[in-house]
Image 1 (cartoon, helix red, strand yellow):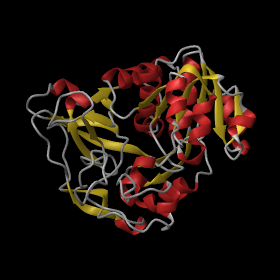
Image 2 (cartoon, helix red, strand yellow):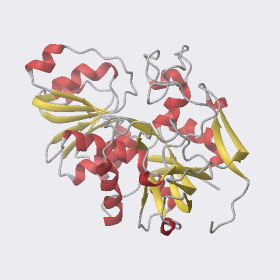
Image 3 (tube, helix red, strand yellow):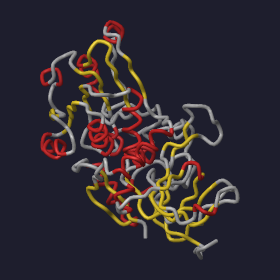
Image 4 (cartoon, helix red, strand yellow):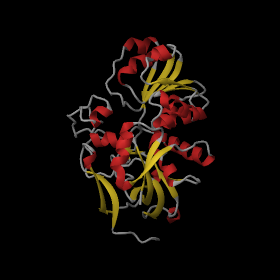
Length: 363
């Protein structure tokens, strides 16, 4: 080993499903054990994401039928812990969350080249399951394994990517979860120079999708609060529709090639009516509610393709590394907090009064 490691580390542990009181900041957590195929990362920054809050409150459980804010505010009382993770199995507590990991490799397992020590890296958020190599089997950073809300993280070397960039650690940490989710959605539907509607466009994934769709030459309609319209146009949106408006009054029916949906909820039937015959719909979120009403006639009479997007082919993350290194993207960091103030960061996140990402700096 080239560095002297402490016996304990600072970390935030999630001790159960529930409110902010379930997040415990500690300075006496054991360092992660490194396997033969792993690298040990000294984490410098980690972004805050919807998945952190959703996992904490147990929103992924099928027992939850309401929007994420309803669960956060305690309107939804019953949450089963039996299926409240990305993989549909119980979360193992205590869990160190944090889907974004940015830092430097300081040690490697015996099967990993020691030449990797010193690399500045980003880790994939949506990794291949180590227990099942078949496609569509995921292993999520901060859910199925410990993530970035700690000074140190141990991850399989094959899921950790070196990056050469002048961006700060905070800026790089804004990328992995949100941008890989957005890139995966656009990759899955094969978005080209087409007309696309992006719902929930001011959040981390939505604002990432605007930038990534712009790189593909798409004509972008963003759905968000109108007080965020100018900021969204600066990053690539051609027009913005109010998230409280009736979409079919704002956008001509059957005029959209692709819908990138992060909202779902009660607007869902209107969204499908906006899509052209033969058009595509892709979802990777449901902040307005997971239960929707589908008129199956709309689906088959318009020859629509409806797609969910969670599993990510490695090309999606490789694309992101390339975009950053070529200068094709600009980071959108709304605010930073020290790790110890994670509760303040998540409270600000849940209020949704910002564009881009909130990032935690790791001491």
